[in-house]
Image 1 (cartoon, rainbow, N blue to C red):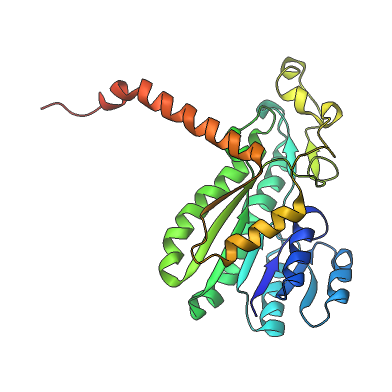
Image 2 (tube, rainbow, N blue to C red; image 1 turned 120 degrees about the horizontal axis):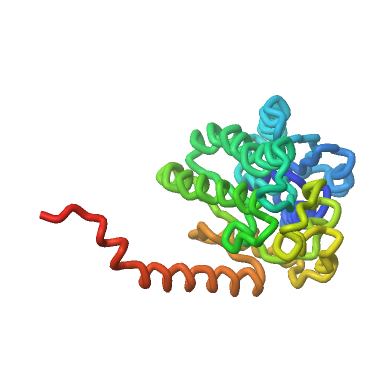
Length: 276
């Protein structure tokens, strides 16, 4: 049976995905910064689950987690990079240490996990890598510039990775969820400490104290978990999996807007060539 390694399983989508994978009869390495928060999953599935402490910004822990997965189950067939959190601030408000930590977790942590599992996947000529992104990477709301940038970096890296590993039998899928009823807009959301008044009507509207969406998001993380499993198990896994009607509509609106602007400025674009 396939073995999944999922990061960020303490709450939300990661936890629901871990539960769904185990209910599906697969092996699962369920991880969180504190293994105690996911030990109940392992206790409920002692033969097929392994709970591990994992901070994806700690290279030693990343290496050890993959080694333990290989020792217990023989290898990692599916890696899901789910660990991450949100950060809201106008670009000018962004605090350098907070932004660095955001990228360390949301982007470089995922890269570290990918590099750790790829040797095994390459040797078996089989594997799936699933990177959890966000529709924010497309719509780039005011106040989410740094978060959107981290997810956009993850998506761009994933696109190149896909071209590198598909000939080796390894698939890469980016998941772009819309609003799902998890802790993302609650406990998991951070923000700049010092707001600037001039951004009150743009980035300021999305500060936690003004956000009323938490707990009312339209997406069901249980159904999202099922959708991810369906995509991984498909004969041809998609590169981009959009989850939620809100995300689908937003994605299409951004794509249509870009195409309109491309057409509008086509003459200027083509005017840059040498003339003979």
